[in-house]
Length: 128
Image (cartoon, rainbow, N blue to C red; front, side, top):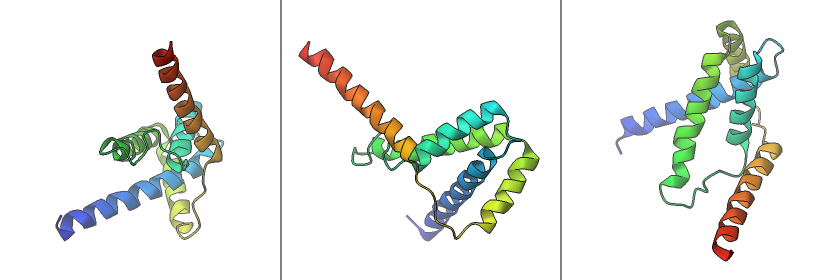
């Protein structure tokens, strides 16, 4: 890959990190609509979860969830959040840029539960 593509990818990653932090700040706001709040909770939990729905060690598929699901979720939430609230939260996210990012324990538990259910279902079907 040329340096130009690497720089573009790096910029996109930084953009989505900033948007995710702004969504987190908007989620905590009482002005956020309920549907946007529900979707934001799902996106934040998944993005901050230390466990992926599709583990990264699975070739190609392991990274597709990070490359598709998170940007898609972020884009959908941003469209649902009022513009004024999103702009305010983006400014606050920029001000907090150097702070540590939180981890979602609940998100990790939910993803782990999904994997356990999938494995249990597969075992049930094959051992039946």
